[in-house]
Structures are given as C-alpha cells and as structure tokens.
Image (tube, rainbow, N blue to C red; front, top):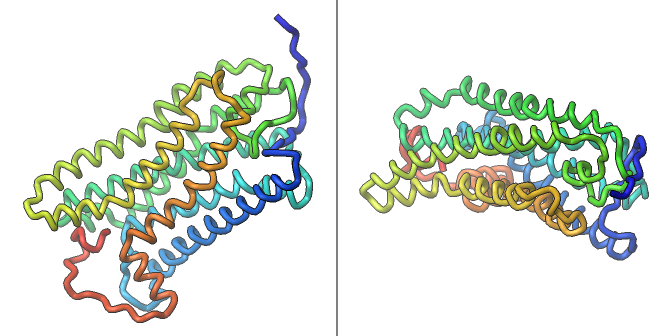
Length: 334
C-alpha cells in the first residue's frame, strides 16, 4: 500500500473547467447568461407574488393563493442555489482568485445541501396543497389558511437546515487532505470527500441514513402519497374537461418535481468510488444551471395567472373572464 501525502489544509483551490483562456471565457459567458436568466426569472416570480400578496397592483388577487406563496419560497431557494454554485466561476474569471478557505468551502457545502433539502420539503408541501385543492375543494380555504402555509414554510426551512447540521459538524472534523485542489467549479460534497485522508465513516453513514432516507425519501414519499389520492380523485371525475382541468392544475408542480428528483438521482445516487470528477462537474454544471431556471420557466409558460400578472406589470389591459368558479375551485388554482 503506497503512502499518501497527508497534510493540514487551510484553503482549497477551485480548478474549474480548463486553464485555456478561450474555454474559460466561453464558460464565463455561458454561466453569466444562465445566472442572469435565473436571477431575472426568479426575481420576477418573487416580485409578482409579493405585489399581489400586498395588493400593490390594485387589482384582484390571482396570485394570492398558497401555491404561489410556496412558489415564492422556491424562487428564493433557486436564487440562493444558483448563487452558491455559479458565483465562483464568475469571480475567478474576473479577479483570477480561485482560492477559498476550508471553512468557507464546508459552509458552502452545508448551505447548498440545505437549499436542496428545503426545496424538496417545499415541493412536498405544494403536493399537499394540490391534494387539498383537488380532493377537498370546498374546504380548501379552511384548511390551507395563511397560518398553516406560514407554519409549513417555516418547518421546511428549519428542518432543511437542522437535518444537515450533524453532517456539517462531521465535515469540520476532516482536517487532513491529500491535496488542496478541488477538481470542480464549486465546493461540493463528493470532490471534497474524495480528497480527504481523515476517517469519513460518520459522514458517509450520515449521508446514507439521514441524507438519503430522511432528507430525500421522506419528501418524495409525502409527495407520492398526495398524488395517489389526487390521481384517484381525478379518475373519478366523469367529464373529460374536468379531468383535463384537474391534470392541468398539477402539471407545473409535477414537472418541477420530476426534473429536480431526476437531477439529484443522476448526480448523487452513485457510489462515490465510481464517480469521475472530471466528467461529473460538467453534469453538475447542467444541473446547477438548468434546475433553478425551471420554476420561472415552467410556471410562466404553463400558468395563466402568472401570465396575467406579468401583463398587469407591463400595464397591458387584461380581460378577466367571469366564468371562473369560486376561489376554492380548481379553475383558479391552476
């Protein structure tokens, strides 16, 4: 067994994608475009929801529903996630500084993973909201009141940070590293774990138990159970138009859930020994860039209320149909 070079590391060097200036410049332009698009889209959704919540627009509250309250939380999470993952590429190209302290690197890992866990929990809360809207439409406003929405959102944020805290404390104990060069474009858990020469048994055990079975599987199970009842209710609707409206109500949420879980499974649900860092960082860039754009893209393209609110923001007259049902019905919850 060959002896390994063990040393106390105080800072990491983020290698990024290439040492060639042309490739660095192209990646910088791509990341900058993606980041500005993500920032603009999510800030637009957040602004629309806030304006509608506080009646600043002076019109009726088409976005004053629990679903858009949770969507605003998703926008905040996506802004934070994209900033955490993409900012180092932009800063290192502009300033040439690709160094980061070990503590900042580990904090970045903790915050990024917490953002993912919170987003999974928020999506499960949105799944419960869809369940109440479709399966209990007459009791929707009694069940999904502002207090419950605030409680669910607070629990999502609190649980997302708390469930990763023991793993973060375990990372702080990894003081020995074979190298201080991270073959990635940001501090992610996999490349840092592959560099360490400290004992990682606790961290790996915590990732397997809490990370997989609690942080990932529990929100998935809750969302899955909600949609079992939702699909059962939809199939019992006799009219085809009613079934289409009900499916349309859930289509945006289902699209975001599918894309997020697919990206997480493909990125993290692999044995750590089989992960190639040089190839996985390109896939990580796709996930870090594409997933935060999904929420504003899907909800703005598929949602009539968001389109209507965007038209109001541009001061374009919008003719509101009088054929909508009461506020608890499925039609206005799409």
